[in-house]
Length: 199
Image (cartoon, rainbow, N blue to C red; front, side):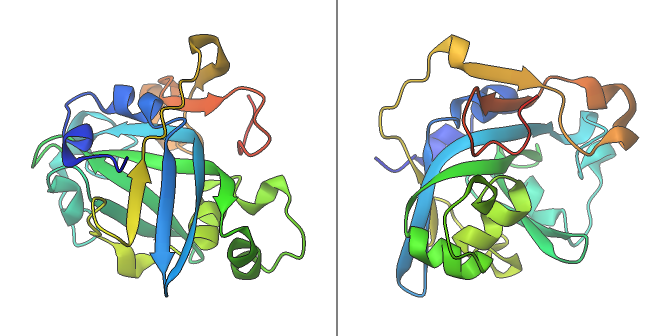
């Protein structure tokens, strides 16, 4: 079942980031479907989170989509190479987001290998937010994409992850955020080989 708009518009971005573990994300690019199970996420909580692009209600051409109602894609470029795929959550003007950090490949693996220039499947195919976007074919042109549509969407396949199988810890690469860098807002599936960082 495709996740409805209501899943994304709830107010607690940290809860949503955790609940996205075990859900499946899919893309249909040029008629080819690729996707897999979400195994690592990070939450970013709008204007009060120093790690969030919308901290202090910052509005730029890049962050404008963050102020939309939840259920759309926020895609931005880092290091001049990687597009990071984020899911906007909450009501309009709240600017909360969940970064999809890693997936366990399931559908369209051959296409993912082509996009990544790999000959064989291995965990670093989709272990990390930048390479996950490459494997799924997500780029800047998907900025603002409706996640209830037919290009990028998420599904609930009734996979229930036991509480003890989910790990939490600080987010990655946000040392500039001071004390907010220590918030345990990264979630991952323990023991899953596709997770970008195991600790």
